[in-house]
Image (tube, rainbow, N blue to C red; front, top):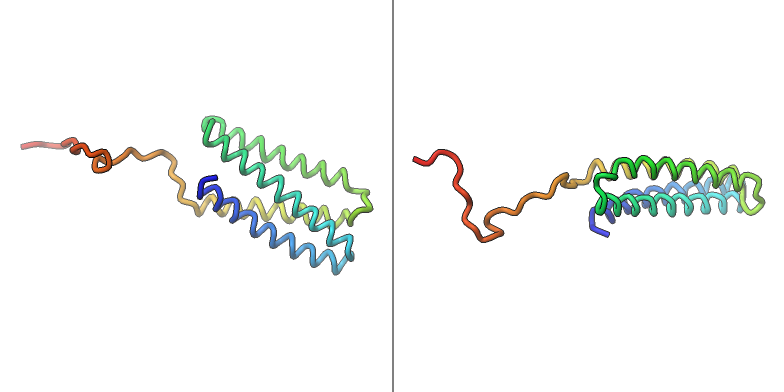
Length: 148
C-alpha cells in the first residue's frame, strides 16, 4: 500500500478506534458488560468494512481510474446497506446489547467518513503524473520562445 493510502487509512482508522473505545466505556457504564461488548463488536465491524472498502477503492483507482467515481459511490452505498443488514441481523441478539451496538455502529461510521474526508482534503495527491524534467533525462532542454 503506497504511503498516501496508508496515511489516509491511519488517519481514518485511529479516530474511529478512539470513538469506539469511548463508546465501549460509555456503553459499559450505561448497559454493563454486554453494552461494552456490543460497542467493541460494532467498532470492529466498521473498521473492517470501511478499511476493506478503502483498500478496494484505492486498488480500483490504480487499475481502472475511469471507474473510480462510480466505484466510490457504489462502494459507499454497499457499505451503508451492509451496516443496516448487521443492525437488523443483531437487533434481537442476547450476545451483546443491540442498542449499544447500533449507536456505536452509527457513531463509528460517521467518524470514519468524516476522518477519511478530512484526510483526503489535507493530502497532497497529484492529479496527473508530472513529466520528467529535462535534467533527469540527461537531454538538453528544448529552446522555446524568441531566439534572436
